[in-house]
Image 1 (cartoon, protein in one colour):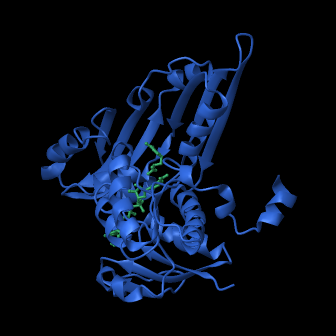
Image 2 (cartoon, protein in one colour; image 1 turned 180 degrees about the vertical axis):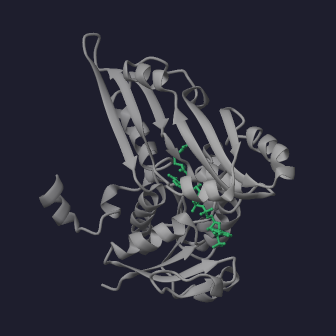
Image 3 (cartoon, helix red, strand yellow; image 1 turned 135 degrees about the horizontal axis):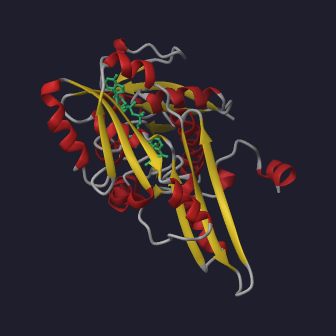
Length: 325
Ligand SMILES: NC(=O)C1=CN([C@@H]2O[C@H](COP(=O)(O)OP(=O)(O)OC[C@H]3O[C@@H](n4cnc5c(N)ncnc54)[C@H](OP(=O)(O)O)[C@@H]3O)[C@@H](O)[C@H]2O)C=CC1
Ligand SMILES: N[C@@H](C[C@H]1CC(C(=O)O)=NO1)C(=O)O
C-alpha cells in the first residue's frame, strides 16, 4: 500500500518533534513543512521541502493528513477550522476550557469538507483524557486526580511567548507535593488544578516591558489567572544556559471502591525527557487514524475518545490479536 503523506503546519518544538516521529513510522512519509515565516529561513534536518503557509491550498492532492503544530493560545483556534476545510488534520489544542468551542468550529468545517479532523490529542489533552475516562468507567464510585510536572508546559510557554515584548520564555508546572501525597490516599478530590499546582515562568524581556509582561501573564485567563504564578526575568545568557530542556510528565489517579469492603486505584503516569517529541509521537499515530477513518468515509471532528486504538497502530488487526491481546 502507498505510504500516508503527511504535512507539518508550523515548525517549532512540536513541528520538529513530528519530523522525527514520522521517521520512526515506515508507513508514513513527510511530504512537506508549511510555515508562516520565510521558507528559505528554515533548514529541516530531514531535508523536507518547506513551503509558505499561504501556498497550502496548492497541495490538496499531495497531502493525506496535515499535523498542525501551531500554538493553542492563538494559532490553532484559527488554523484548525481553516485547514479542516481542505485537509484531514490532527491538532493538539490544549486550552481545556475552550475545547467544546474548538470541537464545534472544527466539526463544522470538517463536516462540510468531508474530512476527518482529530483535535486535542497528545498527552493532556490526549492520553491523560483517555485515562480519566477509563478510570470513571471501571470505578464509577471514586475520584479522579490529575497532576503535571514538575516540568515544562509547551502550551503555557507558547502563551507567554505571544505576549508583546517577550523575547524568550518557558513555564514550569510544579505539583504541590503534600496535595499529591494526599491524592494517593484518595484525599482532596474536590481541589482544582490551581490548588494542586504552582506555575513558574522564566522570561527574557527588556526592563521597560517587564512590569506589563508580568501583569499580562498573571492575569491571563485559563492559563495563569487561577494559579499561584511566579515570573522571573533573566538574561538571554542564563536562559540559553539553564532553560532549554523540555522535560515533563505527570500522573492520572483514579481512586475508588468496588464495594463497601474493597477499594482500588488505577494510575497512569508519564515521565518525559522531551515533551515535544513524546507529544509528536502521539500526534503521528492519530494522523494514521485520521487518514484511515476518512478512507472509510468518516468525516467531522473526532477526539481521542472517539477513535479505537486499532486505528492508531501500524500493525494489522490479526497481528495485535496475536501479539498483544
Ligand atoms: N495536547 C498535548 O498534550 C500537548 C499540546 N501541546 C501544544 O503544542 C503547541 C505548540 O508548542 P511548541 O511547538 O512548543 O510551540 P512553539 O512556540 O515552538 O511553536 C509554535 C509556532 O510558532 C512558530 N515558531 C516557532 N519557532 C519560532 C521562531 N523562532 N520564530 C518565530 N516563530 C516561531 C511556528 O510557526 P511557523 O513555522 O508558522 O512560524 C510554530 O508552529 C502548544 O501551544 C501546546 O498547546 C504541546 C505539548 C503537549
Ligand atoms: N498541554 C500540555 C501538556 C500537559 C502539561 C500541562 C501543564 O503543565 O499544565 N498540562 O497538560 C503542554 O502543552 O505541555
